[in-house]
Image (cartoon, rainbow, N blue to C red; front, side, top):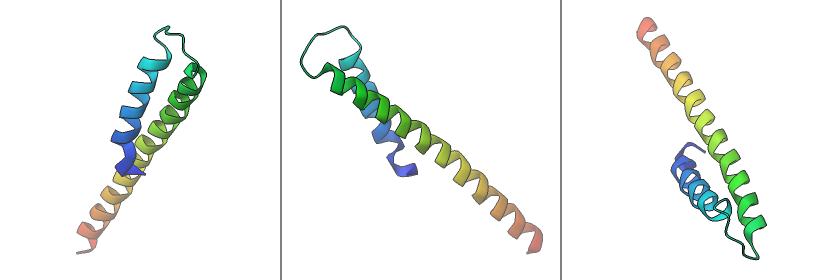
Amino acid sequence: MKKYTFHFLIVTLLSALLGFTGLEFPGDTAVRLLCLFAGIGLMISCLDAIIISRKQRKIKKKSEFEG
């Protein structure tokens, strides 16, 4: 999930610009929903990156003490 963070960021920004600028078009509700789901995916992937990096630091620190 960590490798998709940048993709979620781009999709979130583009859909936010399209969906929330006040333009009226037939698919504006779908674009707003896409922005919502992409934002949720962005949050999850950022949290995943933080959690994985902390785990890797703990493992590295533990192996330094043992070795």
